[in-house]
View 1 (cartoon, rainbow, N blue to C red):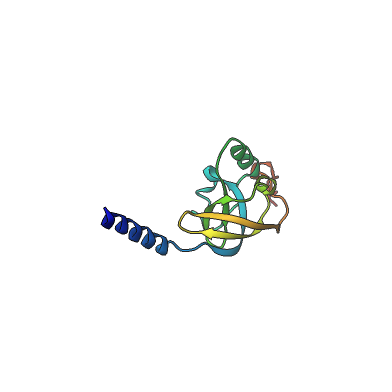
View 2 (view 1 turned 120 degrees about the vertical axis):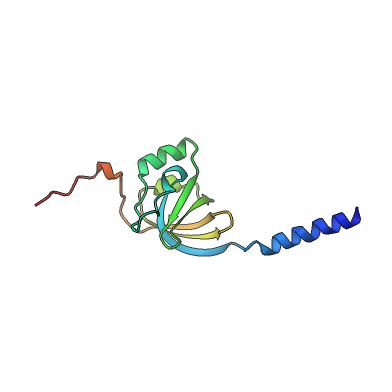
Length: 128
């Protein structure tokens, strides 16, 4: 029994030692919801998610996420209850990133662009 206990502690210590510590980053990108944001990096140009759709989905229980331009990846967001207020803005976030769980814990947010509403609500460019 004692050997089993020692083995369990050794395995736990090894697993803990191999888990990389969260790192602090400053990234630009957009907030959105997990359902609509997953495929945003399949094309060379990243576009923001529809803020009205993301707002509705998050209010209905969807996971809030951050689309990082630098990492070209989607991360679950924790520690930022005002996320819905920043939907539709390109933002700069300072956060702690846990790559293992694809999660960021937001420490600060700065809006760096004007509001970009739903693409379907914008007028089409006129052809000459």
